[in-house]
Image 1 (cartoon, rainbow, N blue to C red):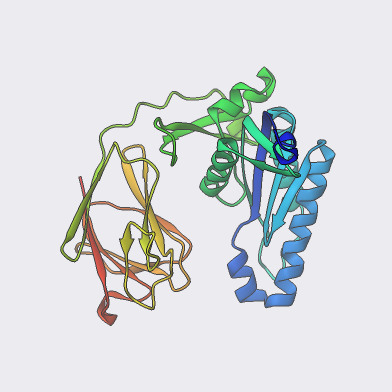
Image 2: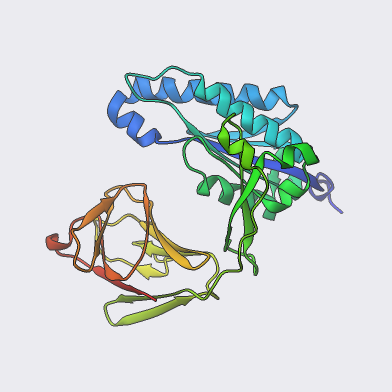
Length: 300
């Protein structure tokens, strides 16, 4: 074993990701200087919440914090504290600041003050599922919590996660005092039913079904599942992922993703998502009538 290998340690950790929701809108509305200050205030509060529960900030990238904790309990407490601290901030020129948080508990590899492994990937996936003001985790992390804290969670779905053969049971942490806390017992989520989405791009046709695991990517990058040869499209423009019996289109682009359901008006997604239903078309970075490549879809 060489010196580098000897620094690797594998143990159970709670890995947490948190980021500022809608930061792009902040920069558009407030300008760079004021938006950066607002994001920094959120980052500082997330950092203090991490330290409050004996966690360690691994890194901050832009508007995102990655932290680790020795237990799922500490991670959940820190996540709730982060939400409360940011929620207490006053609006900035009418814009309410908010964060989204995701965490997972399981085996991870520590090396050179960084953390790697499947637990990290799953935690990042949970953060990606969370909406503003929400904390999302896994049923495995909930199982590692004390019984009392488990009562402040509820199971909400079972989703496919890239690299995992089976769906991951997803839970929400109820961090706010509300009527929801009177309905804390986790509901049983039925097994996913067969889902099917046919996607057509030019002469190519792909069928996504219940066996499809992970995200299906669309964009200019050669690594995408569907390559869009249009300069108005982003390199990784959008993705389609299965959520139980549905397929969801998620925009990740600079210029937006334009969607038309058959018989309905076209609309634009900008860092948003929509369930693909019935049939329709998708344009990348511009409206359908502006020309360019189109992806057609049919659900069911």
